Length: 320
Length: 250
Ligand SMILES: Cc1cc2nc3c(=O)[nH]c(=O)nc-3n(C[C@H](O)[C@H](O)[C@H](O)COP(=O)(O)OP(=O)(O)OC[C@H]3O[C@@H](n4cnc5c(N)ncnc54)[C@H](O)[C@@H]3O)c2cc1C
Image 1 (cartoon, each protein chain N blue to C red):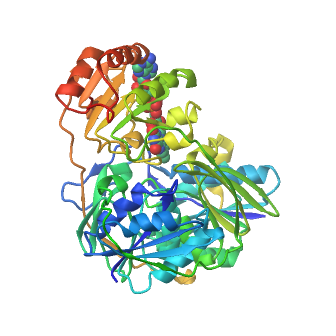
Image 2 (image 1 turned 180 degrees about the vertical axis):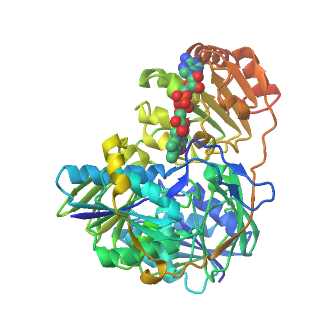
Image 3 (image 1 turned 45 degrees about the vertical axis):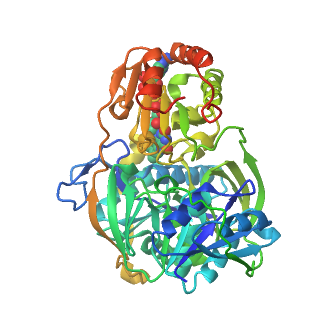
């Protein structure tokens, strides 16, 4: 009874961010318990129960939990948190939305977006858009923590056999009415967990030109990202945004095309293993963090890239 | 209707911060300070609701050092009706800020609290959700669309997969994202007028808030530096190096 993970589903599967939270939890204790809420939790509960290191899976299932409204979910987490020393969730949009409500309900100060565990009470978290790292010690008796997914490998394993137990799903709060999702869809890999991310910025110039970025991404089985300027200009939907206030990614390869490299953008990609940048301004700050920089007009570069890759490669993951 | 807007004084978004060599924190002594950009968006939303007649009073609140008066005057110049300062130095943690705002909500009875979704210094993204929890109110975070009437608030949230639409019962707490609006630049006469305006004050004691931090910052360091990279001269060279040197392309 020491670590409880609030896990969530994403398209009927255990979210990658939740798997990362499990890995983080296993740095704090030998086993962790997992709490899942939703309208239909069975497949995800089974997935969680099979993970290495999971002791128990608690499931709160009811129609009113389908949309993960904080007003409905936080009281369940708060109730189940009794007796646990740590309550963890991935720092994705649900974790960010719900966990502070849990922390305040428990009367504790949440520790947001940790990137490493030093010991049972000390953690490291980025501040100032990742331009500084703070080592913080918490004195609270229950520690409510959100975990930066890119800093912890997603937990794996399929041979665990944790017990699955139903818990009280509570009632609808009546405070909020969910009126629907408008999801951008997209067939490629998830931005947060792709091996390759290709991001376009304001320099791409138009939604039509952005199609070149998307086509290249498809060829490489890469996810597509964007700067805030590209999202604001309407080239791509909001959920493509990488940065301090968008998604944090750390792929093996991050290719920035027509992105200047503002602090707020770098906050979301500086931990990528290899960074490559294409920009026609040799002074662009992105070159200060790029392992490989190419000063060239991006339209001609994208066309050449496509040409070379068409003749010499097969998509990553599909090749031998 | 009455709206309360939270306004935090932070190091300006375009300042490159410096981490002190002794690990004691970030050097903010001579840095340009501004209103947290997300709070500017929250304030702009409140002022627009006031201009459209839905809202009759916009109360800007800052919990922080005495110098936050500067940001409260900016808020007044942008169109806030009143400004309230709660002195707190050193800065409070989000839970204590939420308790402070709770005390103010009890006195002022706002219909809506508008906050930025995060402050760009501590990047916590907590205060709005915590206040909503303490009050037992509806919440919406990362909001990029907002409509308000007597019946409630309709909001659009930016989420990982796209957008979410919610209808909130009032009173509610809404934390805003940058795409909600483009904040105005206050006009000179309004800036001059705001200079003479009165700023109300309350103390943490009057509000019954315990400022004691729960997290102690043991050390602040710079993130690891990346090794300097190389310039490549052609797309062909880029692909070749990504394949054979970095091994990240097949
Ligand atoms: C509070 C706050 C939060 C923010 N959060 C984020 C965030 O999460 N993510 C984010 O990305 N930004 C964020 N921003 C915005 C950020 O400060 C920058 O404004 C933004 O990242 C700029 O996007 P960009 O690089 O695409 O555009 P620009 O800075 O305009 O850069 C465009 C680049 O394209 C290059 N270019 C132009 N034409 C060509 C061409 N034909 N060929 C090659 N190169 C070309 C230019 O040389 C330039 O370097 C935030 C800002 C604030 C204040």
